[in-house]
Length: 205
Image (tube, rainbow, N blue to C red; front, side, top):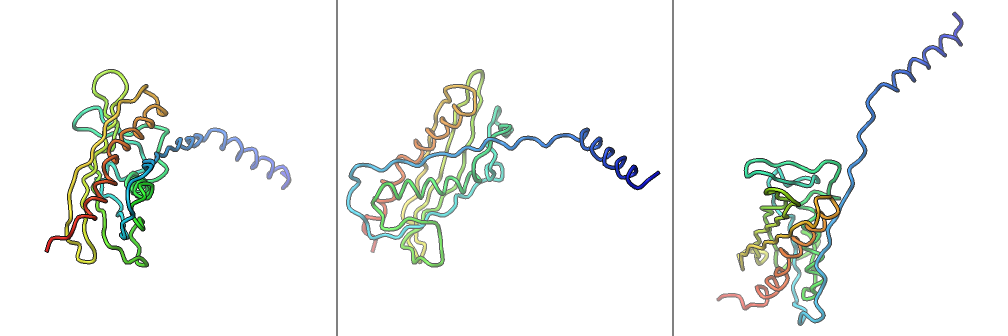
Protein backbone atom coordinates (compact mmCIF):
# COMPACT_ATOMS: atom_id res chain seq x y z
CA UNK A 1 0.00 0.00 0.00
CA UNK A 2 1.37 3.37 -0.96
CA UNK A 3 2.04 6.09 1.60
CA UNK A 4 -0.59 8.28 -0.07
CA UNK A 5 -3.28 5.60 0.24
CA UNK A 6 -2.37 4.95 3.89
CA UNK A 7 -2.62 8.68 4.65
CA UNK A 8 -6.07 8.84 3.02
CA UNK A 9 -7.28 5.92 5.15
CA UNK A 10 -5.99 7.55 8.35
CA UNK A 11 -7.65 10.86 7.50
CA UNK A 12 -10.96 9.12 6.78
CA UNK A 13 -10.72 7.25 10.10
CA UNK A 14 -10.12 10.50 12.00
CA UNK A 15 -13.10 12.18 10.34
CA UNK A 16 -15.30 9.15 11.07
CA UNK A 17 -14.24 9.10 14.73
CA UNK A 18 -14.88 12.80 15.10
CA UNK A 19 -18.40 12.49 13.75
CA UNK A 20 -19.49 10.06 16.50
CA UNK A 21 -18.08 12.05 19.42
CA UNK A 22 -20.68 13.98 21.46
CA UNK A 23 -20.90 17.64 20.55
CA UNK A 24 -20.01 20.09 23.32
CA UNK A 25 -22.96 21.70 25.05
CA UNK A 26 -23.73 25.25 23.91
CA UNK A 27 -22.55 27.98 26.30
CA UNK A 28 -25.16 29.26 28.77
CA UNK A 29 -27.02 32.50 28.14
CA UNK A 30 -25.45 35.21 30.32
CA UNK A 31 -27.54 37.65 32.37
CA UNK A 32 -26.75 40.72 34.47
CA UNK A 33 -28.70 43.00 36.79
CA UNK A 34 -28.95 46.79 37.08
CA UNK A 35 -28.06 49.20 39.91
CA UNK A 36 -30.41 51.67 41.54
CA UNK A 37 -30.89 54.98 39.78
CA UNK A 38 -29.92 58.06 41.78
CA UNK A 39 -32.45 60.50 43.23
CA UNK A 40 -32.88 63.98 41.78
CA UNK A 41 -31.47 65.60 44.94
CA UNK A 42 -30.17 63.33 47.69
CA UNK A 43 -28.49 66.06 49.72
CA UNK A 44 -24.98 67.40 50.32
CA UNK A 45 -21.94 65.30 49.49
CA UNK A 46 -20.28 63.80 52.56
CA UNK A 47 -16.46 64.00 52.72
CA UNK A 48 -16.33 60.23 52.98
CA UNK A 49 -14.23 57.70 51.08
CA UNK A 50 -16.22 54.49 51.32
CA UNK A 51 -15.22 50.97 50.30
CA UNK A 52 -17.70 48.15 49.78
CA UNK A 53 -16.30 44.65 50.26
CA UNK A 54 -17.41 41.64 48.27
CA UNK A 55 -20.34 40.09 50.15
CA UNK A 56 -19.62 36.84 51.97
CA UNK A 57 -21.83 34.02 50.67
CA UNK A 58 -22.34 30.29 51.20
CA UNK A 59 -20.78 28.02 48.59
CA UNK A 60 -24.17 27.36 46.98
CA UNK A 61 -24.50 31.06 46.12
CA UNK A 62 -20.82 31.83 45.45
CA UNK A 63 -21.13 30.90 41.77
CA UNK A 64 -22.13 32.24 38.37
CA UNK A 65 -25.01 29.75 38.24
CA UNK A 66 -28.54 31.05 38.87
CA UNK A 67 -29.89 29.32 41.95
CA UNK A 68 -33.36 27.94 42.54
CA UNK A 69 -35.06 25.99 45.32
CA UNK A 70 -38.19 23.88 45.31
CA UNK A 71 -37.93 22.61 48.88
CA UNK A 72 -36.42 23.85 52.15
CA UNK A 73 -33.67 21.22 51.88
CA UNK A 74 -32.38 21.35 48.32
CA UNK A 75 -30.56 23.84 46.07
CA UNK A 76 -30.49 23.55 42.30
CA UNK A 77 -29.59 25.73 39.32
CA UNK A 78 -31.21 26.75 36.05
CA UNK A 79 -29.78 24.98 33.02
CA UNK A 80 -28.31 26.96 30.11
CA UNK A 81 -28.29 30.26 32.05
CA UNK A 82 -25.71 32.03 34.22
CA UNK A 83 -24.79 35.41 35.68
CA UNK A 84 -21.96 37.37 34.08
CA UNK A 85 -19.95 36.98 37.32
CA UNK A 86 -20.14 35.15 40.62
CA UNK A 87 -23.22 36.34 42.49
CA UNK A 88 -21.27 38.02 45.37
CA UNK A 89 -18.99 39.89 42.94
CA UNK A 90 -21.99 40.97 40.85
CA UNK A 91 -23.77 42.21 44.00
CA UNK A 92 -20.67 44.14 45.06
CA UNK A 93 -20.67 45.95 41.72
CA UNK A 94 -24.38 46.74 42.02
CA UNK A 95 -23.91 48.07 45.58
CA UNK A 96 -21.01 50.31 44.52
CA UNK A 97 -22.86 51.65 41.47
CA UNK A 98 -26.04 52.27 43.50
CA UNK A 99 -24.09 54.20 46.16
CA UNK A 100 -22.30 56.18 43.45
CA UNK A 101 -25.60 57.02 41.78
CA UNK A 102 -26.97 58.21 45.12
CA UNK A 103 -24.44 61.06 44.87
CA UNK A 104 -23.71 61.71 48.55
CA UNK A 105 -20.27 60.13 48.91
CA UNK A 106 -16.98 61.59 47.72
CA UNK A 107 -15.64 58.18 46.72
CA UNK A 108 -17.21 54.72 46.59
CA UNK A 109 -15.05 51.83 45.45
CA UNK A 110 -13.93 48.30 46.19
CA UNK A 111 -11.12 47.81 48.73
CA UNK A 112 -7.73 48.86 47.41
CA UNK A 113 -4.37 49.53 49.03
CA UNK A 114 -4.13 52.82 47.14
CA UNK A 115 -7.13 54.40 48.91
CA UNK A 116 -7.17 55.62 52.50
CA UNK A 117 -10.81 54.82 53.18
CA UNK A 118 -12.88 56.37 55.97
CA UNK A 119 -15.44 53.57 56.23
CA UNK A 120 -16.15 50.06 54.98
CA UNK A 121 -19.45 48.42 54.11
CA UNK A 122 -19.43 44.68 54.85
CA UNK A 123 -22.24 42.40 53.69
CA UNK A 124 -23.33 38.79 53.90
CA UNK A 125 -25.48 37.40 51.09
CA UNK A 126 -27.98 35.08 52.78
CA UNK A 127 -30.51 34.54 49.98
CA UNK A 128 -30.28 35.02 46.21
CA UNK A 129 -32.49 32.42 44.60
CA UNK A 130 -35.75 31.71 42.80
CA UNK A 131 -38.16 29.94 45.14
CA UNK A 132 -40.70 27.53 43.64
CA UNK A 133 -43.58 26.90 46.02
CA UNK A 134 -46.42 25.10 44.27
CA UNK A 135 -47.50 25.79 40.70
CA UNK A 136 -46.65 28.90 38.73
CA UNK A 137 -43.60 31.13 38.32
CA UNK A 138 -41.09 31.43 41.17
CA UNK A 139 -40.71 34.18 43.75
CA UNK A 140 -37.25 35.72 43.93
CA UNK A 141 -35.78 36.23 47.40
CA UNK A 142 -32.75 38.46 48.07
CA UNK A 143 -31.37 39.05 51.57
CA UNK A 144 -28.27 41.02 52.55
CA UNK A 145 -27.05 41.48 56.13
CA UNK A 146 -24.92 44.64 56.18
CA UNK A 147 -22.49 46.14 58.68
CA UNK A 148 -20.92 49.59 58.44
CA UNK A 149 -17.61 50.29 60.20
CA UNK A 150 -15.25 53.23 60.58
CA UNK A 151 -11.65 52.87 59.43
CA UNK A 152 -8.89 52.33 60.33
CA UNK A 153 -10.11 51.10 63.73
CA UNK A 154 -13.02 49.16 62.14
CA UNK A 155 -15.35 50.32 64.90
CA UNK A 156 -18.94 49.31 64.20
CA UNK A 157 -21.39 52.07 63.27
CA UNK A 158 -24.59 50.26 62.30
CA UNK A 159 -26.01 46.87 61.37
CA UNK A 160 -29.09 46.26 59.24
CA UNK A 161 -30.79 43.58 57.16
CA UNK A 162 -31.99 44.44 53.65
CA UNK A 163 -34.47 42.18 51.91
CA UNK A 164 -36.37 42.13 48.63
CA UNK A 165 -38.93 39.83 47.02
CA UNK A 166 -40.51 39.78 43.58
CA UNK A 167 -42.73 37.31 41.72
CA UNK A 168 -41.66 36.45 38.17
CA UNK A 169 -44.28 37.27 35.55
CA UNK A 170 -43.69 33.96 33.74
CA UNK A 171 -41.69 30.79 34.18
CA UNK A 172 -38.97 31.64 31.66
CA UNK A 173 -35.48 33.07 32.10
CA UNK A 174 -36.12 36.66 30.87
CA UNK A 175 -39.06 37.02 33.29
CA UNK A 176 -37.14 35.34 36.12
CA UNK A 177 -34.11 37.60 35.62
CA UNK A 178 -36.41 40.65 35.53
CA UNK A 179 -37.82 39.51 38.88
CA UNK A 180 -34.26 39.12 40.25
CA UNK A 181 -33.63 42.72 39.18
CA UNK A 182 -36.80 43.90 40.93
CA UNK A 183 -35.95 41.98 44.11
CA UNK A 184 -32.40 43.38 44.16
CA UNK A 185 -33.76 46.91 43.77
CA UNK A 186 -36.14 46.23 46.65
CA UNK A 187 -33.29 44.99 48.83
CA UNK A 188 -30.99 47.91 47.97
CA UNK A 189 -33.67 50.62 48.08
CA UNK A 190 -32.90 51.74 51.64
CA UNK A 191 -29.15 51.06 51.59
CA UNK A 192 -27.76 54.41 50.34
CA UNK A 193 -29.84 56.48 52.78
CA UNK A 194 -28.92 54.16 55.66
CA UNK A 195 -25.21 54.40 54.85
CA UNK A 196 -25.35 58.20 54.47
CA UNK A 197 -27.33 58.67 57.67
CA UNK A 198 -25.02 56.41 59.67
CA UNK A 199 -21.87 58.17 58.39
CA UNK A 200 -23.34 61.66 58.89
CA UNK A 201 -24.24 60.97 62.52
CA UNK A 202 -21.71 62.33 65.05
CA UNK A 203 -19.32 59.76 66.45
CA UNK A 204 -19.96 58.80 70.09
CA UNK A 205 -17.49 60.27 72.54
